[in-house]
Length: 384
Ligand SMILES: C[S@@+](CC[C@H](N)C(=O)[O-])C[C@H]1O[C@@H](n2cnc3c(N)ncnc32)[C@H](O)[C@@H]1O
Image: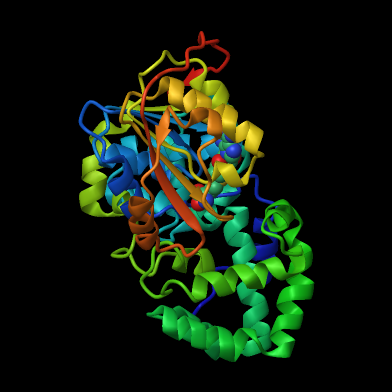
């Protein structure tokens, strides 16, 4: 099993301006929870752009993708521009799903004109990320790539082969017991790699782990819950590439690409906080929300303020999809008349998750629009 990058490349990726180069939110969950109609207006966290592109594939009339991180917005803009300008095969090369550094740079020159000035400046400065294979250039993947280097170093290359071949959670448990519990493996993964988790320490603190133990705890959780082989939501995080072009999120398949591509002009990108973006929208105008796991990134008060905007801007019945690494979020008391939960459906949704990352997936629905605040337009809508 070849590793995605050498140790130097993996370390360089930790300094990438992009945190998420691909998304680990399973499209099966998004599809079931949001089920957009042809006239649906959806609001989603942008992240690596994969969820917004999936929403286009599913046929939404309008998709607003919002992110506080400018590099994530530039990444979405590049993916959207690529989808508009390139054939399916070329798109896979631009994203590094199919590796061809020289061709990827040539393709960037072709799509560059479809980007706004800011995105052009960003990607002109970061052409090296495109040359190295964009899909693996997020810090999240860089972190796992180092973890794997540590594992290979301490447990040997056969352990990496075994890891890539895990086809069931039971095999994953055996791998954890036989490999990750070895004292020298634990020492390296916990002490050396623990130091690299500074960027993640906030999340680690929230789940009550020292950042030293966070890496191994996360790896153990994933491996004991989901298979690795053929899994488009785990394999690329460990190995920096998809298992094959047959095991990719649907918008990257030939059929899914053909569905999403003609709709790419329906995507609107917004740089800023999602609560502030929603505050610019009129009441009862959104048909579905995909809020990623923002609840893990912010405090309960900020989340309550966001959900108030969700309740105000959602049409009655609009689904509100939330992921969480730390446990199931609950509807704030003041919004219990505005949002309704369906715990049985949440169990079914979590069962669809192939990332192994999330402890909870919830899909609430907007009940009524009892909150009313006047919109204040601060955000700039940027259609790429
Ligand atoms: C919450 S993170 C989770 C990533 C996810 N697990 C994935 O695989 O894509 C996704 C994105 O949310 C953005 N984000 C976090 N809080 C936000 C907020 N309040 N408003 C807008 N974007 C936010 C981050 O910048 C990041 O790019």
